[in-house]
Length: 162
Image 1: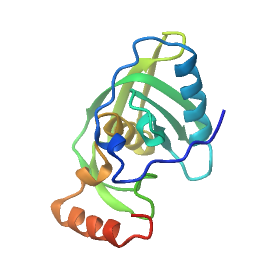
Image 2: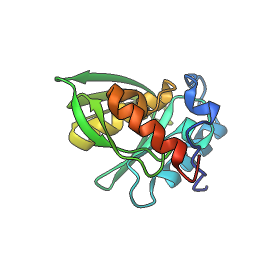
Image 3: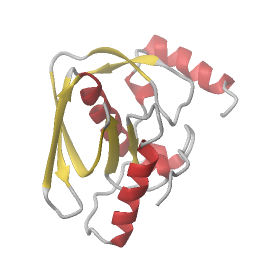
Image 4: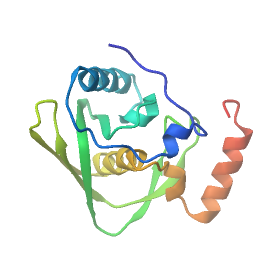
């Protein structure tokens, strides 16, 4: 379909909790294709539906060349949270240590209604948490320490895209 434009910090769709997908129809199939197309450019680990302006619970991922998607993901995390360097397509040019769990698991469904389970450590764990945060209306800036968040918000205000 198409690589869709990424919505940026300040867009209301990024702050709203997303609705579950109730029916898999042609619109959802087209959304999944757009999510896949939008995550394939270099440097992208994930794209959540609200990042392309759609308020439903779906995201795509691109981790070490493994590209896929999940509908209606449910996140489970484990391990002691720790700071991990992170950025976001919706907050371009910023990179800060977000507090993330070292292990994450997502259970959801595919376009045929079959269960999908994604699980991992490192970048996969970080991406699963990051994308599920988007579906809950949260940006990674909320996962920063108060000191780092203050710096990040100043960087946002001073950016050329804001």
